[in-house]
Length: 119
Image (cartoon, rainbow, N blue to C red; front, side, top):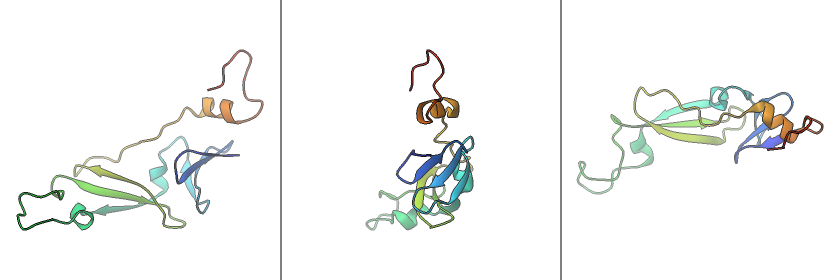
C-alpha cells in the first residue's frame, strides 16, 4: 500500500520506504530523511535569481556568501523533489518526520487496536 505524502513523495507500507511517485525509485527508509536518497545540487542562488538592474549592492538577488540553494532530485527520473535555502555550512534540514506506527494504524487495515482513535 502506498500513501502520498507530498506532490512527489509516497511512503510504501508496510515496508516503510520513501518512493518517488513519478518513477517508483526507492529513496530510502521512511524513518530517515528522504533527502538522503536524493541527488543533491548545491547551486549559486544568483544562477536562479540573477541580479536585476545596474546596482550590484541593491537588488533582490541572494548573496552566495550568505545563502546557498540546495536542490534535491529523484535519482531515478530527475524530478526536482524539494529545494531549500540555507546559510553556508548549515546542515540539511529534516523537514518530514512521521510517527510511522501511528501512520500504519491509520492506513493499514486491521491495525487499529482496541479503543484507539484513528488519526
